[in-house]
Image 1 (spheres, rainbow, N blue to C red):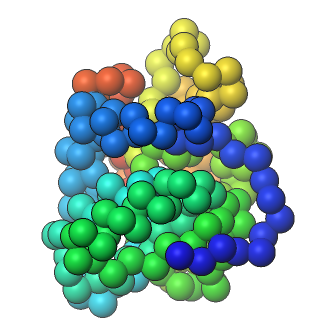
Image 2 (image 1 turned 180 degrees about the vertical axis):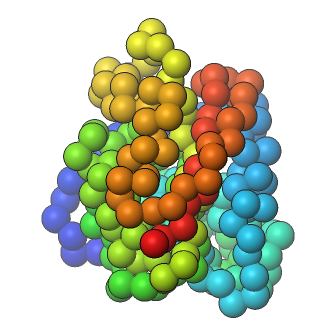
Length: 213
C-alpha cells in the first residue's frame, strides 16, 4: 500500500464516522449492495488485460468481486482512509488477489494520464461537496484512456427528507434524481440511461455508465 504526497484534505469516512468502520462490511452484506456491484462489473464489459481503478475503494468489496470474476485484469484502488485500505489489503491476501492500493483523494488521483480502461466508483460521490464532485470527475476523465468507461453508483435522492450525517445530507442534495448523470455529461462523458436499483437499506441507487469523449 502506498501513501501519496498530495495535500491533506478533509473527507467523510465510509460510514460518516471513523468509529463506525467495523459496521461497514455488515452494512454492505445486509443492504444488497453486492448485487449492485455485480451489475457494475457486468456493465464494465471487462476484457483480459484491462486496468481497472476503484475510486473510494473502501474495504475493497467491489475490487474483490471484480477479481473473483476476472482474474485476468489489473486491479487498483484509491481511498483516503488508511484503516479502510488495511482491511482491503487483508481481504485481497485471503482471496489470493493482487491489487495495488494507494492512499489518495478522488479530487487528486495519484495516477498518470490515460492509465486505465475502466474506473469504478460505488456510493462515494455523495461524500463530496459540489466542487469536489466536479474535481473528481475531471480526474477520472484524465486517468481514463480514450474510449474508457466510468461505471459509477450512488444514492438517488427523490426529496430533501434525507436523515443522517449533516455533511452527507448537504452533499446528497446534489443527487436529486437525474442530477448525477447531468454532472457526468458536463464533465465530458457520454452517458447511458441511468439504471436504478432498490437497496434493502438507503433507498434507491443509480448506476451510471459513461464513456470518455
